[in-house]
Length: 440
Ligand code: SUG
Image 1 (cartoon, rainbow, N blue to C red):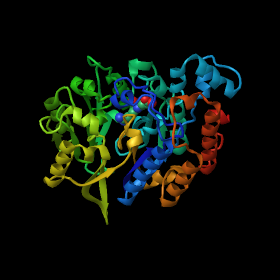
Image 2: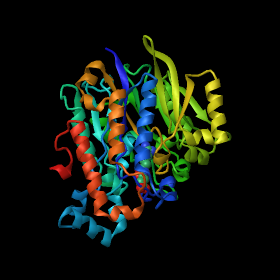
Image 3: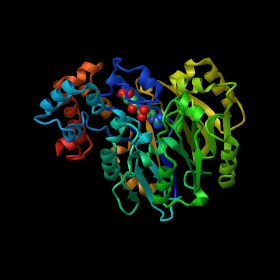
Image 4: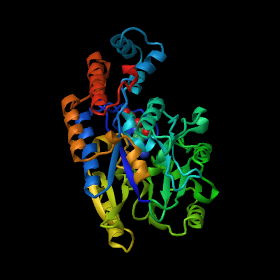
């Protein structure tokens, strides 16, 4: 059976803005209150998807969520018509309103954790949407994310959907942003790396060990194909609020910063024991500091196995944010890495600056789902892209999105109406029916 990796990027929603909502995420804090450009953000995201497809890779997407989250605002006691709900929330608590306006579902690495069928005891693809308990604006994504995943992967013959983990921060789970899979080939059984944190001196850890263990259990993974690794506090306190800011795994390669893990030697030994084929490519702190990593998002790159004429070519491309090209130390390290004799031999820099300014690089913007041909054809094809569908989505963005949003716009009921009417139009394009809460 042939398997392929599908990257499901988040289609960036019309309310993308900078509200400084994520403590421990330095870009989010730095850009609080700045004007955003949702139109440009969404087009940058779609251009990245197109670039991955040009490499011959499979590309899907997850839809944005309906924001403002009127259902949440109503649950918090704001009553009346939709316009009244927005006006009252704006008068009472601007920060609360901003939380209900975040377009943060764009970072689909946090949508959930996925285990492909070659790895699971029942031979099915397992999904657990992340509860994102660490931040209010993100925690309210889980319900709609679960609905979207169940909508796209609805065939019970192939797909198993678990609910987001219960228990709030006791089982704080941020999805695939702290998870990687090593394998000799996408269709071969893989080894799952789960990275968890413990609170630092400056910043809190979002991913709990017990959450990772629970996801592994639900996904019917076993001790032979799982490794649990503690993130270093130095990385967390430098601003690596998710492990995918300091490392990425793909196929046989683990590409990461020297200071990613609390105990690097022990972690590498545990990984090598279960995945003896692993090729570890490490950036020494002497060449690239943690600070450079966080600013440039070097390791928030997509590491992609390039297809050959007849199956995988054995070559990998690194798709990096433009900020990595602009940092001379990072660029030098990337050039050196590609020149060396290893699996990474191609580099592409893409502009995803609107997302980067909220702390989301290329890897944050995608959820990896490895699927067999039969599984891929059982998925809802509206969400698997080709050039024509990308052009259609670009057209939708150009029709409905603003090119400038400031914090004051969130208080304006006209902006709410505009955003929800964009989402309404999207459900028609994607044949989703009355998918969103505001349509029900
Ligand atoms: O959860 N930023 C996101 C960025 C997520 C990045 N994802 C990964 N590393 N996989 C977060 O901190 C900022 C929103 C704001 O401040 O307006 C935000 O939610």
